[in-house]
Length: 284
Image (cartoon, rainbow, N blue to C red; front, side, top):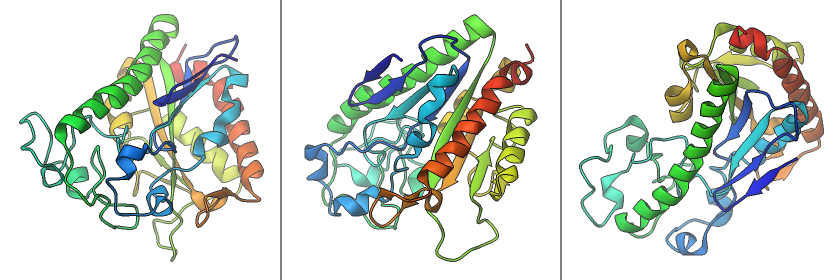
C-alpha cells in the first residue's frame, strides 16, 4: 500500500479498488518540536493529555477495504487542524494580531483555538508570549498542507464518484464521574448538516449492536472539519466519531490497554460494513 509520511501528516492509501472513503485523524499527532516545547510550562505528559492518542491505529486496516487514512503528525496544541487556520487568542501574542484573525470564536474564548492556550486539564500551556511571525509560518506549513490533502481527496471523490465519505475520528477523555452525556461513542453530524441520516444512523446501530453506548452530537457535534467540508447536498458526507479513551487506552501512561485489539476489530468490522454500503450512502 502506498504510504507517504512527513512531519505534517501520515497518509496511507489502498493499492487498488480505491473507494471514495477517507478516515481522517487530525488530533492524534505526537510530534512535539523542541523549539516549541521550550516555550511551554507543562511536562510532556501533561501536554499529551490533549492528544487523541493512537486513535488512528484503530482504523489502521482501512486501506485493505479501499479507503485511505490521513492522520496528523504535529501535536494539536501547537496547530489544531480541526479549527479554522486563524482562530487565535490575542492575549497569547507579543504583537497585535492582523484584523483577519478570528479572536472572538467560542473555541478561542475556551482556550482551544488554533494554538491552544490551556491544556486538557485546564492548565496554562505557554510561559512566554508567542511570536505571530513564528505562528504564521507554522500555520502556513502545517495547517494549509494538511487541509490541502483533505481538499484533494474531496476533489478526486467528486470527479470519480460524484461524492465521498469522510470519517473524522477522535478520542475523548473518560469522565471521572458518569453523567447523562457519558457514552462510549459520540457521533457528530453538526446536527444533521454534515452527512446523510443513513450514515449516522447505520453507524449508531452498528456500535450499539456491539454493546457500546452511543449518543449523537452532545457534547461533540463536530469541529471545523465536519462543518466546513460536510455537505450532503453536494454528496460529501462527513461524520465525526468520538471514542472514549478508556475503551482502548491507559490514559495515565498513554499505553494501549488489553482491550485495544478488541476495539480495533470492532472498528475494522465497521469499516467493512460502511465501505460495502458506499453506493447506498452516495445514492449511486
